[in-house]
Length: 333
View (spheres, rainbow, N blue to C red):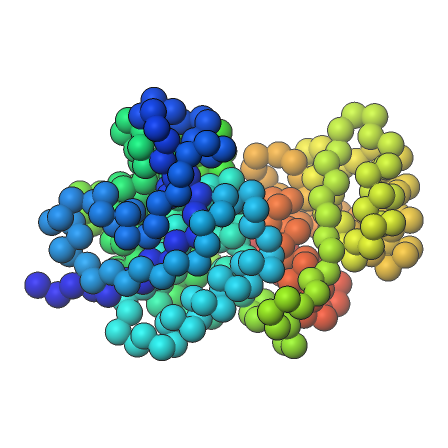
């Protein structure tokens, strides 16, 4: 039997945490202990393990709320080096905490250019919990990473037997297992009866690549998110600008609108040379660059949610892209 070779790069998170009490699905993050990549694999039945040749590569054991763009650059570099130096790999699986998993997946998808499938996977329950979902999710991720049809689709997120495109997925529930969803276009595939199915193709993919000249520890442009609400007075916007933000993403009221005071603060930011992107705080739906935004020099995030729009803007600014090029990336479906 052919055994596909998969690299598992572990970065911590719930999938790699355990508590003393199997009923604990809440406090483990603060008082639990961490597992290594080999421990995650050991949780799978032996006959499942026997289907793959797994190479465990530790990256970190931190919680996903501790992740930064700088750390994800390091992770992207490790993934690229791993694929380049191990030509027999069928694919790569990244275990990651779910709190910032959608941001990590989006970042990797925008930066990476590797010829093997890259799958990001996490868990909602710690490894010690009753009916822990980590082993099932990890097994599904191994199946997808070893599937030839997964190649060329960019970074994928696997959870609850569904396959999602990295730039479309969001975490929708705090504790439920079906937390990862792609609200606008739905999952791209599923894992069913130990088989991988892709139900739809992938359109043109937003891709920036590794920013030229960036090295480990290099400076990354500050980009902040401003959450709009009734009565918002623009104080946060001015504070971010004062802190040195080179870009601002507005998580606006649907369909991408702000209060008059916020609009005035954003206009002042644009006048200072700060790139402002109008997004929506809503669960689904896009923001169109309507005439009013165009006249004010504000970009529209399209179907990217604020957190993902922030990552794209930071990478684009780091690479020296102008506003027209950035808007073209946001305009992609």
